[in-house]
Image (cartoon, rainbow, N blue to C red; front, side, top):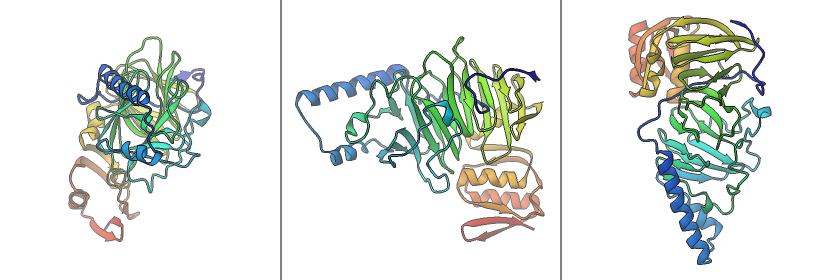
Length: 362
């Protein structure tokens, strides 16, 4: 690691993570074909001089399976420039129960857990292959030549207990873990491709030789050209990690220290500073995309924090057992009570339920 000038336009540290594109994700050709059908319907409607009442259009926009439009407060912030890279999100992760895609001030889409949200090369949106006809929301701000040009950011907010997949306009795919927020451009220009992440994502970056991809987090930055890796960088956790599956990434910490990574390496960042690098089995660190968690001696309190994100139920520990190391594999597709039963057997701890909170204690 050596001193290096900071990346231009980066007031925060940048972090990246990549996810292999799922087979169910629509191709750019399919998205464009869907939008051609939408435009034809709109043109026919205009020729017939049909005008739909605002309440009816909002109701019609909610007919897509697993998809609904919501009016948000008019001051709903979008991180449209790098001054807002601090991720000052309006949504409260403690109360949000549905995945939201914020597309404009006062306008968002609710999608089901596990859904794939896709952007075409021109910034049009589809959810599980169904094109979102934003022309139906006539009382909301509509996409225009300026609202879809490079640099305009959307947000996806994935609350606790949910996951989602995002396919960006450049072909980059991203699996988003529970309790995560991501801001990203609807389309990319010719400069660096930038997104903002608070949480955990696994990204598979589309290669563009002369257009690096940058992920910004609250505490460090990562820049690549085309690769796949996992980033665990929740802003409420002082410890963050990057695990590289293939390619090469560059990490820049808060002290402007730089580190390069090779496949099957884990880089730990503590309080925004590069801490250590070691060899790992990278596949284990993306197993969460298949509802599995591999544990390598993480303290019990950290495991409980992960379970809270996955299940949305607070799990606490006594101070006397908070640092018990946990090894093994957890299947987070099974009920939380069964997972806690297995942990209690392995650690000789008791499970106590107190209202909405579960506690592990001696």
